[in-house]
Length: 424
Length: 163
Ligand code: SF4
Image (cartoon, rainbow over all chains, first blue to last red; front, side):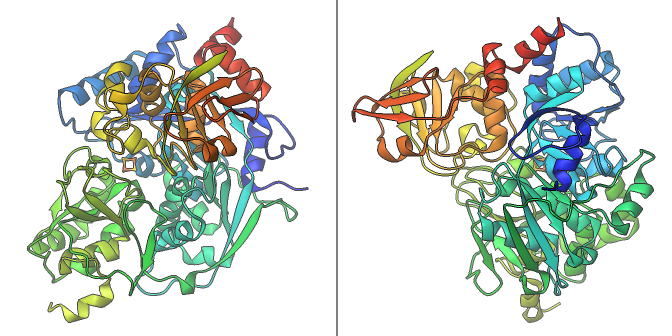
């Protein structure tokens, strides 16, 4: 029996010719990541090991992005702790405010992750880098501490579900709709402990930004990782961002999959996840009349260049509804500058949108757009759990940038197709 | 090792945002986190939990973020063990890594009620519902994880292996 992409990467990193699902292994990691919430706990654990150096100061990335720029004294103290730790241990990839972006947009952009890598991150959306053909997965702070110390992590070799993409997405349908559609179909535990492997001729239709969005939300189906087959677009992206050596792993023809789904991209409609779970999806035509108070466009799911352009396409010549606050968060400084240079900020500001420096902020109800009781938000983020964006009795609806922007204009959950009725 | 206490019951997909909401993550002090444990789905949790109590939940317990604060909050609240039908994988590894015992047992979850008296025997891989007079079998930990638990978590395991 052959191996899947994930299994091949893990075999290589554990010095084996082959592995099989269920096997427990210790693997070498190429990058260990943490943020301002998880790293302080990791530092505490790391210090218990009594070491004064990390396994490789080039292979650790620490990104203060969640409560940054610091929202209060406590968060400032947490960042101070990890800043001092990074200085003391000479961590090369510590990204200060002004350099930082949301971690999962930042690492690929900085060229810190390439195809064939094994990456662990003390953040559940570390699975994002599967878009580039890497094995990357979220772990906890203790794993991060031990990873920083040893350069290793333990894994159970996962089974895999294969998603064979065919066809071409329709107008107003992007990577976000694809992944919401899949999660709606298999459920929030539909891929529990498993890898989601994306392949098929439909891949060619998806931009790298679409793939980041899809891989990002693999965790929302319970998956250990999501991974895309490497193609020319991936290689072009990697070469444009990194000097690191990459390695392409392809699944064997007789690789074992516990399930295979054929996903016809052409059949996917604009999709929204209703509260309070990402698998509670409805598609265009089923939304009903849902008035909203806030729209958030950004996050590690949809804060990239394509997302900025998608939002601008809708906002151009239109205004945010008077009952709605709309916030846009470009995910990194580089994206910020490019969006500005392309003139997108003029469009946003003209429409009445507030633009923020990169931060996780509202995505986790941290700061910069927290919801009050009974308020509703449409967000391009990845979680709509109870209380995720603020008050436990507020609601979050997950959507693509196109749908989020259209909703901001109409004041209720809408797609761009509904805008024809709204005067420009 | 034996855990014993009353059952506190929850349903499917209890996520880390309700186990410990992000608004409290400016702290990593276990006692402070425990004071807000489960607040958003069960405001009464911190009043009713007693040392040794056992959380019994359904599918996909601990889904969502990778915050280790979630098992830390549960452990510091006095919970001795979590039994669920299935666990989200990051929550699972975090619990093992910090030494909060967690077990999967579908039947126990179906056949127990809030307040039942539960006893878990980790060595035998046995869970007893004393109130209902029933015994359930569960999977023992794989050897590798047992080693981690015996070393009081992953940090202890690595420290001993570094020597
Ligand atoms: S943007 Fe949201 S989901 Fe992404 S890393 Fe930040 S808090 Fe997590």
